[in-house]
Image (cartoon, rainbow, N blue to C red; front, side, top):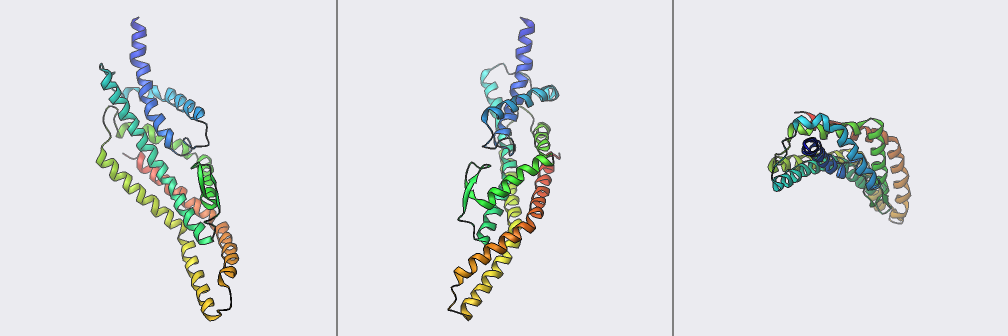
Length: 255
């Protein structure tokens, strides 16, 4: 009975706390929390990861509360920390949605809607392409290991048993959203500039030769040269995003 009580009060309690933070982070975090991944697989992965990390993180965990209300509050606090970390990583991936929307608008493909498996909703074809490439690059460069490391390293910043500092978390989230939007704008900047020059030229042609139906003439040229420019710059765009994504993750890992 004493050994059973020690097991229930020690190992299972530690496993529960680790699983709550990891599971809530993996619920939203890119790669692990994608909608096309089965919920059962995500749950099993979170359970297995929590089981492996429990002996490492156990010295950082608080003692088991004697009151059930304190235990519930501790679980809620851990879940909020995990959701905060997962949302930070998801916001960084949303930069591709911003870039894809702007690029598709300049290419004249904004009306071409396709199913985006990363968002589990219809989106333009460019955003869907960038989202799938981002998942492939994260796996190819082993950045998914850094995502797990970010959650593990969060125990040194957000001690278990302490509530998430709302003001600091909101400030950091706002700066991350702004940085993500800036990254998306920077990725789409060449297309915006070239599109502006292209539309300016088409406007001059329309004024000089009013008989030409500029819309029907410019649309095929816009799509052709836009897709060509996208094909030439796609690798550079994704490498730029990958570097920015890694830099933001390193910022989370730094004390």
